[in-house]
Amino acid sequence: MSVKKLPNRDGYGNGLLALGASNPDVVVLDADLAKSTRTDWFAAKFPERFFDIGIAEQDMVGTAAGLSLGGKIPFATTYSVFLAGRAWDQIRTTVCYSELNVKIAGMHGGISVGPDGATHQALEDVALMRVLPNMTVIVPCDAVEGKKATIAAAKHYGPCYLRFAREATPVFTSEEDIFAIGKANILREGTDVSIIGCGPILYEALLAHDELKEMGISAKVINMHTVKPLDTTALLHAAQSTGVIVTVEEHQIAGGLGGAVAEFLVQNCPVPIEMVGIRDTFGESGPPEELAVRYNLTAKDIVCAVVKGLARKMK
Image (cartoon, rainbow, N blue to C red; front, side):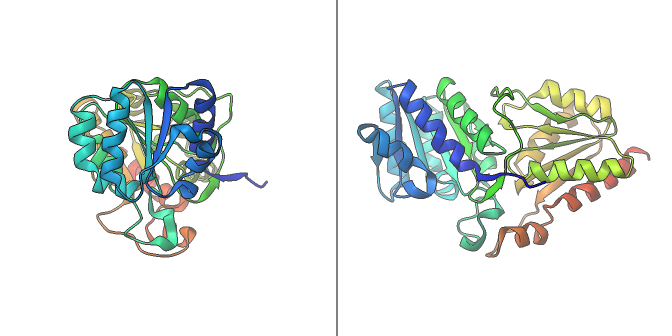
């Protein structure tokens, strides 16, 4: 059966359109990449509330901070590497330190950016944003959840980082699914192992779930779309009920979802943890599907991590 595919950044564009129609305080800023980031959709309908700052990411964040002080809800948007990296000082000191109501939307997250290569593949952005006090970090898994996350971010007061991918990826959540910041969603129930992921790579976890089922392994699959704050209640229950955790992310393992999960569990419920993600390396140019194989981010790699974790569980 074919699976519908859309870039989850389409969800961001549709979320902005919905917000533009419902909340006159929502404004959108971009750094000369509006077509790629889908903010051109908002610009076409609400031109008086759209600001193209040009290739000046640090200035864009500062401008967004000023708009928030004037009562607006600004969404500052460009590629993740330029926001989380180049404008990190402004996000830290101007936005987070003052706890301003600024939304940071980073596009082209992960290795699947493909041909653009290492300079444009944000593999460290979640870690850079997660470490900041007062920052909320959300990584939507598909276009449907991307729209919900964007709308939820506008209603949530305070700094918020939203991470989106470039490529069209499977849509596997529905409009009826409940989305709440800080509240994980259980995609599949299971008793032997818990697979916890965020972003489009979660579809690979669902494929792994089906493969594991054929092997007689019951895997719970959890969508931890909010990396900060973690849903520690769901995480603790998963660790206690299955005894093995496998984290899955299209990001450096250090400082990302895997790091966040490990930090919590080592203090509260130590269990074997295996991590699927980028292992201390930069990316490279190539087709997304080939890069997924090259960097061990496929369903097959998740299955291998589960088998390894279960072996540690039985020792």
